[in-house]
Length: 233
Image (cartoon, rainbow, N blue to C red; front, side, top):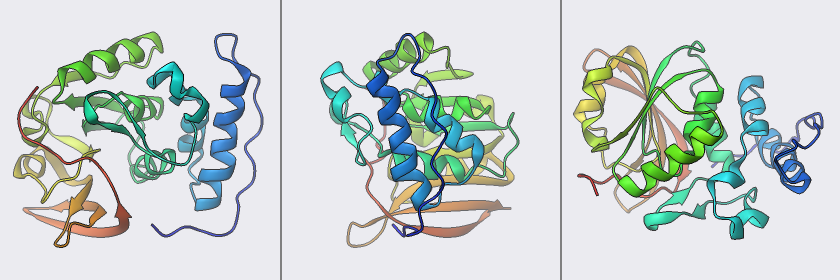
């Protein structure tokens, strides 16, 4: 993906919380200063959310030393937690929305992206097709007082019609095309943020804007995500 070469201003330091090792606090601040600001993440709300959401708590303890590295990491059930920059970038794409906007997240995973969206003040409805992951996310998010409006075990391709319409739908799994249910469930002028696989197997992060039954689209560059699959496990 395109990166900006000019570094941003360092984030102000904050003391480690009593419940968190200081090295984790310092690693998270370094992540913001070295990975996010130089690449153009500029929304103050997103920066604050990334600086305060403890990514390491969504990972097993043995992964804590690399929890804030510039890369995705494996989690349970053969899935991954996204690279911090990608989480911040996808979150910043929602910046035009008001704080109380209704957002449908496809792919709860371990719950890290969910927690960031909750920290941004959105009304988050999150779907995960793998029950084991949803249970783990619920536990961690509950302990952090970051539970969304809904955590559902369901087929993400079908969305969540009972909560529609949504101001935005954000997917952390790669689709071959935007599922029709998502188009139906996002409001007019709403956003769909999702990776999409094209011919040749490459994945591109796309921002779609609903315009009637059509989608205006912006190509935001190459990414790599787990595939969007049907059904529930």
